[in-house]
Image 1 (cartoon, helix red, strand yellow):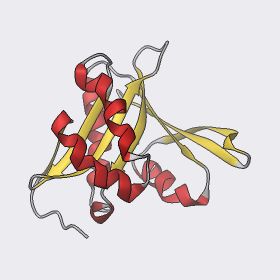
Image 2 (image 1 turned 180 degrees about the vertical axis):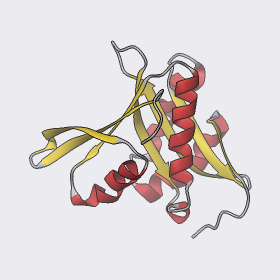
Image 3 (image 1 turned 120 degrees about the horizontal axis):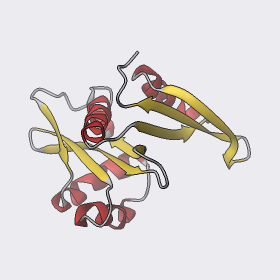
Image 4 (image 1 turned 60 degrees about the vertical axis):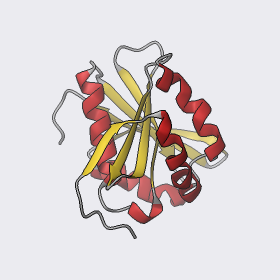
Length: 163
């Protein structure tokens, strides 16, 4: 386990961070690390409004978050990926990434942030994480990912105070 002894910061992701994110992706299995550069390029180059943030402490990248605007909406965003180095999980890194994402989106006129996850038992901690951050369970789409695996959609209005 990594113990955070110094101030953690959350900042915009840079191309130089891509390599440091590979161990996070490998450790969490969120998606294959070789997909990262292509996924991040539109946001890094300014070709898309995508928001990519990284959390770091003592010069080490500990996690990242990725959100993109929902098409055909006014100010609605989707938090598509968030991952924290397994050794740093449970120390507030994920919470810091979500709160920084919310703040940046709010500052840019974002209204709503959605998060989607699976209904499988292996995702219970993920659902609990968003419950603990005050997100509302807005919808369940049955059999979305596979037969018997629902999509659970969490919702937060960015301009309203947290409950």
